[in-house]
Image 1 (cartoon, rainbow, N blue to C red):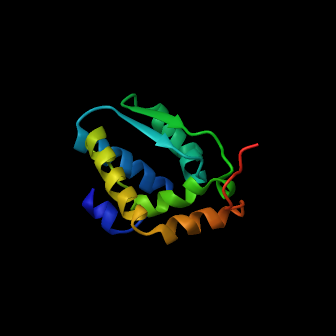
Image 2: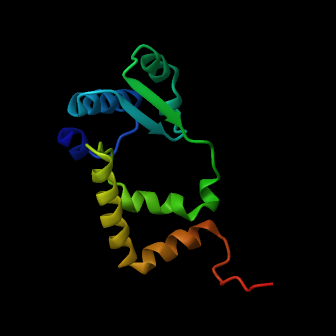
Image 3: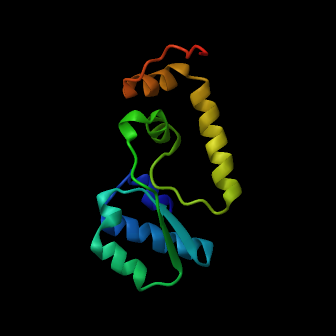
Length: 126
């Protein structure tokens, strides 16, 4: 995994497949991949590969409007390249740590909100 991460984030179909294979080897069992709708993850070759291997379960996230969702701008701040987590606890620990780092830099979160073009004024109760 370290070699894959040190090369920087990549998004080719081959890289996605290699990430799955290495995660399975490292974890020693079946894996579930939660994919967004990036075109390389929807590619026919990767879909066929997944259909041939029963150790892999794929969950596709629904399409969204990321340009209106400030959380979409936060994820690149939290996620650092392709990372496989050994346990759900590893994932939770990493998310907590990175979200804490973001909280210490409020200008980053403000930038994520500003990028949506949505009003930043607090809502007044009606």
